[in-house]
Amino acid sequence: MLSGLCPADVANIERATVAAVAPDAVHTWPLAAQPEASAHWLLPMDRGTVGRAHSAVPLAHQFTPAHAAHTQPIADHYRAAGLAPVFRLPDTASAPSVRPVHQALSQQHFSPHEPTWVQVMATDAMVAALGIQPVRVQAQVGASTQASPAWQALFLGPGMDPVDGAHRVRNLSRAVGTVYVSAELGGQTVACGAASFGWGWMGVHGMRTAQSHRGQGLAAQVLQTMAQLAQRRGIARVFLQVGAANAPALALYQRVGFQPAWGYAYWRGGCGGVSGAGV
Image (cartoon, rainbow, N blue to C red; front, side, top):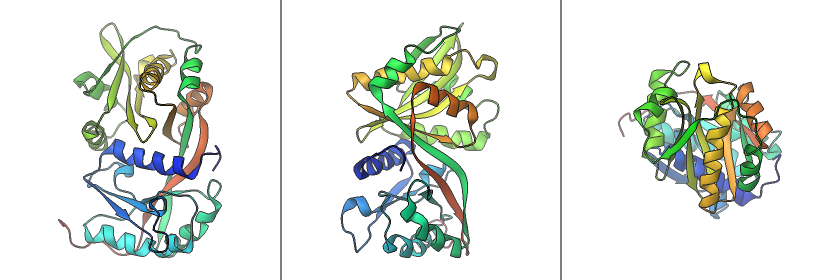
């Protein structure tokens, strides 16, 4: 782990991540040798396309042989529900003890995909940093508890697979307490994002800027409104997840002051199909 988070922080971020994408169901998979809740896996169960909503994730980054031993029964649990098993696991640079889990999955013909960073920072520092970000165009920024048609239209715009986008909107919309932030110019929504609140953290999701308005400081204005919302709610820390290949977003978050917490990937594949479809 790169940011010095404590084990409870990791568990709370993972719980908040799953809650923000509101799967159809969430199962808990305890490790018999470690009855404490922080050693459990969370098993989000969802038939949509949102990876975080249907991938098994450990609540702790201190891995034991039991974690590796449980990968096969967890995969079978997903298959029995008619779902393809997916594991969301930290990389070895962030959590060296995860290596045996990676090896166990490799033996079951899983492989890692979509390397992603979890990044964190303090809410007060985020507000201060965004207050001095250069802004070329000042937008009208508002927040709502509903994803408006204009918010959805921008989120589902060019570059977003329409089926995947529809699932993402569905999952975000049914999460409890999500706030949708929009930046408007001339009555047109040109930047947007969604904020989740839970387990002591604010999560940043769904950041989009219209292609014709990029580079104008609009995403920073959306983030600033989110940070102010967190500040007013007494939430001291913020997390987000960003693809390792998304250079523009990584550059923005670095300018704001986000720090890497850990990297992860989705382990997909595995031998054998699903069984018990419709269960």
